[in-house]
Amino acid sequence: MASTGAARTILSAQESLRDWQESLYKDFHRNPELSHQEKRTSGLIAEQLAGFGFKVHRNIGGTGLVGVFANGTGPTVLMRSDMDALPVAEATGLDYASTVVATDDQGTQTPVMHACGHDVHMSSLLGAARLFAQEPDAWSGTLVALFQPAEELGDGAKAMVDGGLADLIPQPDVALAQHVLANRAGTVSTYAGAFLSMADSIHITLYGRGSHGSMPHQSIDPAVLAAMVVVRLQTVVSREVQPGEFAVLTVGKIAVGAKSNIIDDHAVLELNIRTYSKATRDQILTAIERIAKAESAASGSPKDPEIELYNSYPLTDNDAKVTARVAGAFAEYFPAEAIEDYGRQTASEDFSDIPTALGVPYTYWGIGGVDAETYRAAQDAGRVTMDIPANHSPKFAPVIQPTLTTGTAALVVAAAAWLGRTDGRGEDRRRRAED
Image 1 (cartoon, rainbow, N blue to C red):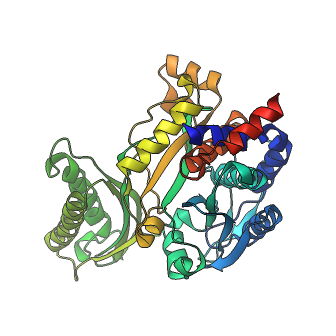
Image 2 (image 1 turned 120 degrees about the vertical axis):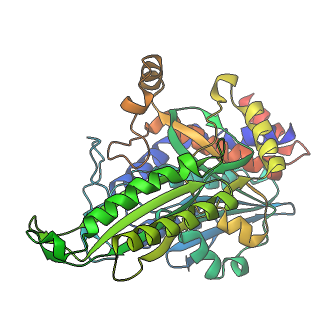
């Protein structure tokens, strides 16, 4: 494939960027910022992109930014990274661990950590952007490097779209993105079709009647009501969703009361659901409302429950043709043992809001971030889920190498599948340099 030759030319200088990229990664990891607060992060990224020769547009939908590098005629490829971190206290023990404490949008002080690998994503995309800028003879077209805020809230991509993204960049022909996962480092995995699930969070307030703990007959106990709702919710997936259709319903929070001898007048539940089809999503949301209202009525609640939907994520549905093209380029560039099948992931992402709004086909793939020997040992012992910290864990810590090398190469190889020159100029240059 001519595109693979172009990718090899572009990546020929990758080793020379190693110290810079690893230092950049450690800086991102040591200085995480919460969703919609990524001011330092976006400023550092903008400075780097401008230094590479990209035209930079900042403050898109808040802290979002894009860098545009026009290099002659040809397709336009958009590559995206997220930037935000999580309200998690780091427990990795790394010498570059975060000790940051920030104020969240509720005014609460919270520790902050890059517990989902967005520092890997930013470092990889900046590495790819620098390599493309250094080898203009190897490719032709336009590269758009997009850095998105607030992925962890599910509204950062939409904020950039609403902030005028389409007016600031040329219309892309394809959009690409990746995520580091708790798989063997040095590996990549593509998936055509529905790859990441839709997600919705639901806040439910259940109403009772308060009383002294010694006088339950004068109350409508919201603790009992909440317990009945939680038990009944366990039957939604097991008894209402068709067998074989994927669905998850999790009750993540129950809050009621303030003291042992006080029966409160309300209880709060927070739920999360994951689905791959709109029909199943709607079925589950309808069941949740039905159960909350029915149990409230059965308990004699003074009023119906309040049900609020928030933090909704779209389905990440990878375009089959785009995915096949990227998978073919990966197979040409990476050794066979680096290509794995991670399968469909039940995590969720808002990346697809951007290509969907722009009317662009896209694909989103995974890269591994766990030390290979550590992963194999856990796999052999059947203890991967117990011994390998997953994304959002306070112990989540991708190994720097080969994670960064692989993440950068994957972006370059994928983008070069559209942007790589077909006249051999870049390949000839690489061969001359090797000779």
